[in-house]
Length: 196
Image 1: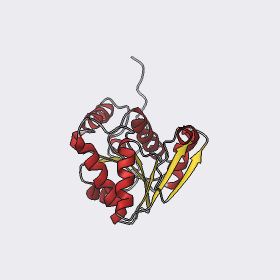
Image 2: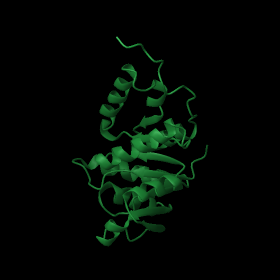
Image 3: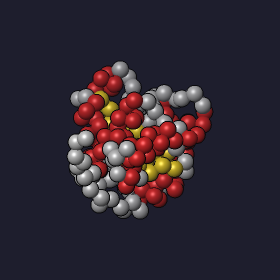
Image 4: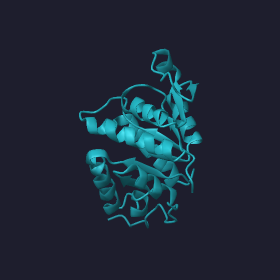
């Protein structure tokens, strides 16, 4: 599938190393170069502002979706192609998922992980069929991958569902992998085991 729009989830902080901002800039420029609209949380803060600035500087379209509370606190990026204000964070997430053909997480905190896992879970359940990925800057997402693999070993999820979250350090390769992804057809549930 050709991705026309990608929701990017990432930190509203910059992180400890400048390498995170470099990766965010690379993703923003790559999306713009491929003609993919960036959908994101609408703010100028942290890596969120960096990825938006990079996409805009490269001539891309950037659609911000910001909650009313953050808008009223002055967090809206001033140079977006388009923006909309939602009543709260839940409606903000739902709107971003509706607008996007796929999802990419950059490094971030609790909100970033929550957004990534929500859209991946909706794919696992078949509520939508949209690819997810993470830009693995500086090995940031290696521990997440290890945890997901452990969940599969312990039979809390299928390895096919672990592999639904594409992991790559190169934004172009990551997008290529997402565009060639096919929804796994494996059963979510393991056979019931008798009580010991």
